[in-house]
Length: 147
Image (cartoon, one colour):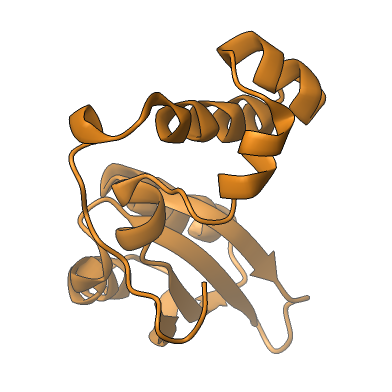
């Protein structure tokens, strides 16, 4: 898309079938259900040229507009179960944990960064910070970015 392009939301019922099929091909490839675009296109019934023409322009609403990713930096005590408690709390808040990186503990604490996608979107970030801050062994929690 060029700089003047804009996204619009359109009910899929009024779209040509090719757009829905492009999304299905993308899902098949992402999930590993098909190994090549040729086999995925054959499976859903579109040509490869149609797939390649539209693949970078067709997205589901959820895929393009609600994938808010939050990155957190935390300082955790070097004690058994602290990180697993944080991950369990995030799971309990219906977040999709995308990445977890932990440094080697120094002076009894470790730096941990977590990237996640909250079910409710980025507006849930302050709730997440509050819950994590109350957990035992969590020294500090900061939001470093939010899409």
